[in-house]
Every structure is written in C-alpha cells, then in structure tokens.
Image 1 (cartoon, rainbow, N blue to C red):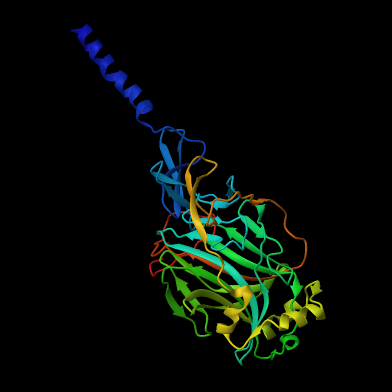
Image 2: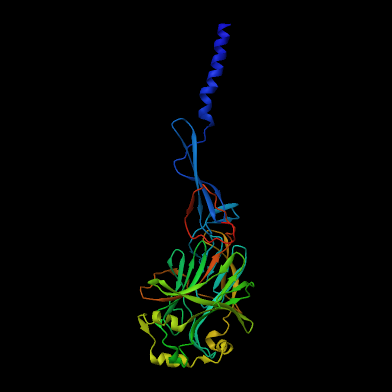
Length: 393
C-alpha cells in the first residue's frame, strides 16, 4: 500500500510542475502585427514577468492608406510610397490602395492615369496656363509641351520644362493617402496689364483635361471653390505658395467645368493675391515674349480652347505589358494607324531644381476612413496623415 501511495504522489506532482511551462504564450522581444486593415495595424508584444505570468501590451497604428489588399496573397500588406519604372519608360505606383501610372512624355495624351481604391478611373492630361479677367477675355500664357519625366525621389516624378513659353515644371507626388499634381513656375509671367487685361480682376488659371471621367458629387464652397467627391477619393482645397515659404499659402479656387463636351478641372487664383509671391521669382519673361504671348488671346473660354495649344491631345491607346515584378500592368502609349518603330525616352532618375519656384497644386485624398471610433484606454500611434470623415470619433 505504501508503494502505491508513493506512485500516486509522483503522478500528481509531475503535471503540476510541468503545466506552467506549457501554458504560457511565447514571449516576444519586439512587437508583432496581429491585425491589419486599410488604415490600421494592431501591434502586440508579450512578455513574462518574474512570477511566470504572461503580460500583453498592444497599440494601434493609424494612417490613411496604411495598407493595401493584395489579391495574390489574400491579405493586407504595407503600402509603399514609391514608383517603379517599366521597360517602356512609364512610372507606376501600384503598392497602395490607389494606383497611379505616368507616361514618359507628359504631353502624350491621357498621360496621367489614376485608379481610386473603389475602382474609379481618372485619366487626365495637363493642358495650359492662362490669364482671364472679369470681361471674360483669356490669354494663353503657356501650353504643356513635350517633356520626359525624371524620378527625383522614390515617390516623386518631375517633368522639367513642361511648358512652351514659360520656364516651368509639373510635379506628381504619390503618397499612401492620395496623390498631387503641382505646377511649378520658375519665371514670373508678368502683369496682366502686359497682355491688355485688368490686373484687379484677373485670375491665373490652370487647365487639366479629363477623359470620360466618372461623375463626381460636387460640394460648392462659399468662395466658389468646389470639393469633388469620386467615392473613396476626393479632390479638396488646393494651395498656391513659394517652395521655400510654405507657411504663406493662398487658397486656390477649383471648379469642374464642361466646355464643348470636354471636361476640365480649372484651378484659379486671383492675380492680386499672388503678385507678391510671383515677384520673388528669380527671372521674368522678356518684353518680346510677352508681346508674342499677347497674340494668343480669346474673348472667352470657348475661344481659348480653339487655340492651337488647347486643342484636344491625341488620345493614347491602352496597352498591356509586364511590370518589373512580373505582374501585369495597364500602361499607355500613342496609337498608330500603321505599324511603326518607336524609340521612346523613358522616365529616369533625376534631381530637383535648386531654383526658387512658385507652386499651384491640386490633391486627391483617400476619404474611406469614415466613422472611426477611438476607444478609451487604448494606445494609438499616428504614423502618417490621418483623414477622418463622418461623425463617430
């Protein structure tokens, strides 16, 4: 009987000694991701104290467009703010909730191809800059011309010398939260009076044409600016500013205008509000060039579009090709009526201009982060831009 009692004691003691080691979750020295969504990641770290107890610490990382859903892997992956270049010279950003494709030549027709998170496609081409006064008279200051893009940062493409008469560039920036188009002037176009316009009532306008776009929901503002909602993406308020003086921003009035069955985004800023900034540019146009530009005038916007520089671009055709990572991508190229041999210059690495510049921009923002509720007692880390919409915060 004593022997049996001893064996029973051993059987009872062994599980009690071993079970604590088997039941604790493994300790992690660094936080690991335990949950991901379009705009958040939950990080968790497990430690074991000196009494053998598991302690779990976690925090929620927030940023608009933080992740994108990869249909190949079937899970959310971290968004990357970067372009890759294809063998035919395009720049493509596809590792995010929205995609952006830029043609090698900004003047190739439909050179900017943007796909929203909910599948809406916005194909556009920048067209030109004009002065317009209260009489309706327009003067075409500069039209977009052939320019090959340069990759000046992982997520920034610049088309230098993108306009025909004014030294100016076009810059495209891809971020997790959206993308932006910036017109950068390096020369002062001068006073509207140089072109026979009234400076007190003149606005500087930038025309961008959109090809068969989806119809946005338009919210007019009290000052005439329009907010354009395309579902999960929205075009909000633009700004004009000197590159080195971003704190002094001037609001840009944006309108969605159809002219002779053509759709335009027109960005306008009053000349008298930006004159001080333009006067700080390092160079200005010569009198001879201003005289020749004054001849490109029209009595109204319809007449402006009839000028050579504002006529429709030859629409690029869509072609399928393979991206560097082996996946298929939608790209653009000029359509040809017969087989031809093309030698296309592609987007290549470049560098930013050290010159002082004046910028006029528009930005698309991801607005799908709606009705987010912050929970009391939890820790949140904002790792990037966070755009919240709705009522429950």
